[in-house]
Structures are given as C-alpha cells and as structure tokens.
Length: 271
Ligand SMILES: [Zn+2]
Image 1 (tube, rainbow, N blue to C red):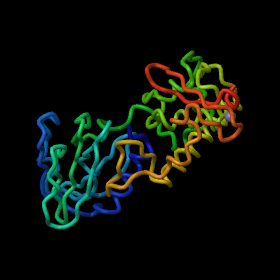
Image 2 (cartoon, helix red, strand yellow; image 1 turned 30 degrees about the vertical axis):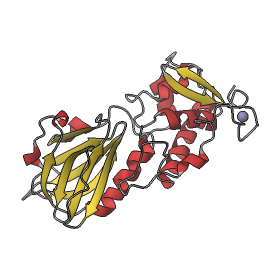
Image 3 (cartoon, protein in one colour; image 1 turned 90 degrees about the horizontal axis):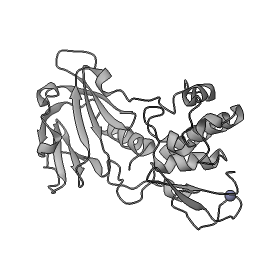
Image 4 (cartoon, protein in one colour; image 1 turned 45 degrees about the horizontal axis):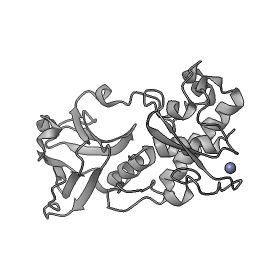
C-alpha cells in the first residue's frame, strides 16, 4: 500500500509536471468510480498538486476565478497509479486504465489493476481533508502525540496505523518508526513516557522525510508518476526482514501479527 512518502512522491512529481496547465475534460472509463461531477473540472487551471493525508489532490482554479475552488482527490489504495504523458498522443491503453484527465499539454491516466482506488471531485475543500493530523506538521509535537494517545490501551504499532489520529503511516513506516524509537510495538500507547514520545515523534518525522527523499519504498505495486520505483527499500531496518539480523545488534528480526497486519521488530532493541 502506498503510504505518506509514496503519495508525497507522486504529488511532487505531478506538481512539477502539470501545475499551470488547463483541464480539457475528464473521461471516466470505469463505472465503479461512480458518478463524478466532471463538469466541475472542465476548463479549470491546475494551481498545484499536493498530498492531503494519503490522497493526491489537484487544486483547481475554475474559469473566471483566481483562487482554487475545486479539488480533485485521488486515493491510490492498493494498486492505483497516476501516469503523466506529455504531448498530444493518446494514453497507453490498458485494461487497468480507469480514467483519463485530458490537459492542454498532455494526459494524466489513472491506472489501477485491483480497482480499489477512488476519485473524488468537490467544491468544498473540507470534504477531502484527512481525518487525522499530518505527522510532518510542525504543530505535531511530542506533547500533541501524548495528548492524542491519552490513556489508550491500543498497542503502539496498531495505534500508529489509525488514520483518524495520524494520517499517512502504514505498515512499513509504523514498524520502522517503532524500531527507530526503540519502542516495543505491542506496548500500550497510553503507557509511554515523555522521553518515549519525544523519540517517537522525532523518529516518525525523520523516517518519513528520509523515505520522501528516496521517493518511497517499492515492493510489488508502487510506482511513481513516471513509472519508476521507490529507493527507500534498502534503508529499511525491520520491515519485511523477519529472520534476518538486526542491523544494530544482530538479533534476528521477529514478525508478529497485530490486527491482521504484520509487524516487524527487534526483540533486543525494542524492549
Ligand atoms: Zn536489535
């Protein structure tokens, strides 16, 4: 699943490619995307492409307006990809092609083999704001995390996946953040002390920034807007490394299942 760094990578690349261009129309090829108000995006100008939580959002300036007034939000889910093709040629036809946003200088194709991805179009920005806090926001301090956790008995790793608390962390970066903060993923989040929250907050931010710098992590599905794969995979300390030696202490990395999701950790470093 693409997590925050992968979505940020797509948004940044698309922003560099299509900000300032004008929308001609949106062709929906898959009925499963629902009835989209395509007329809202027609003839609008792309102000920018940004990440909102785990969605790629095109901020659109409607005709005769000067500020963004329409938002087109794409959730990639499992296998969604947004591929930009400059020039006048048609997009690469494929069974997985679900929608095409035609612009004045090229086309943006939404490909999605498993078809779990979604597109939303709205003229109310509040409709697409993420449910939780943005972990890279400077306003997310360790005190804020501590207050958010309260007395919750939820295991730390499972809590980090809750999108209504922090938005954007998934299995990969939640495991990596627990390791970097030297915290046991099964520990109830409400039992962490001040020093634990300080390390956790620093670790989350550092890992997400490093992953963004390396354009995310690719296992099977994720590709960025140019079809390239993420380079962060070689920096992973615990994720998908069960049985391999911890890079810090040499103890074999263990895997446990929490709420049907795999968690990877070092039993020595994360006591
Ligand atoms: Zn270790």
